Length: 362
Image (cartoon, rainbow, N blue to C red; front, side):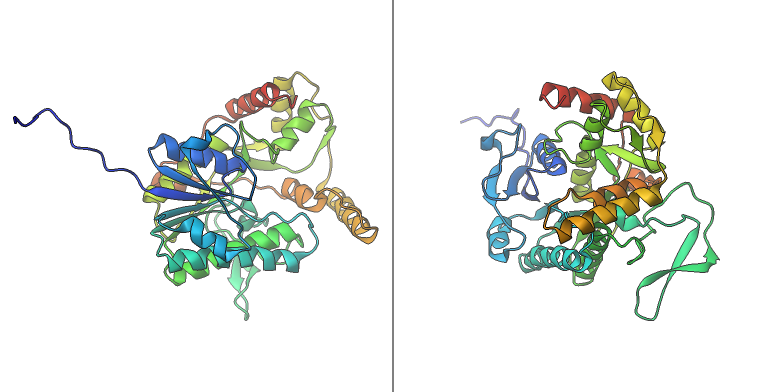
């Protein structure tokens, strides 16, 4: 039998990657990106939840619970890579101790199993809240307890925004979301010291198509429906969810373990954001820009009253602080080391509004 000299060597099959939070806004796009790059995907979800837009035959679904370690053991088995984007989101913005405990507990459950199964690479999706909210010209120092505190005697070189060397200082915001996200990311670094080969990604405010819940896209909907007459906050950074997903997979492939990367896009004022959304939606732009301090105070009062009367108010404290305390961000490290790129913000907003219309949100 003659040998076929024209045959090409087979391309090795890419491994199976576990994605936690696969039904979420960022998670679903990461699943899609992994599939496009030829990976097998094991998608972890809470029992009964489906992933819109992905055929069930394309992924291996597993039910998992970050509060139940035994479910994580089965979900992770045989996966050399884990992308963790099932981040705990506290609804109660005032119960900081409970939020820290729950968030850190989930991190420990997942990463204990990663170490036990010798997972080769972990990508952890964090939050811009962990970058802090202070003046970018101020540096910090460690106090006697090892905590970072503002140091008024040290002045940083002038910068255009926060970068990977900036960290949230515990207690500066008095918000369960900020406290939990800081504590969770800090726990990741402790696991790195124990040998976890992890990369930390900090995406900015994430927008784009496919925001089923919706999450950050809620502000687009409010403006587009003419139900947001006023805005708060100053300059912030927004990024497209599709660009976040691309960079998350690249970070898994060749990000440096122990490294922290900001995944940014465009720095723009909240006024420009509001005008762009309203123009694309064909409605009037928000007319007012409110000072942040009194709005944050009202949000806290509302949640306190709600707790006393047994009501379940929206996450006013969390949402208000995220808007009011946003900062410009710098992402040069991610662009240089993992080829992070970001499309123009108007394209993201155009695609977001089109998706909301196609899916009857607008």
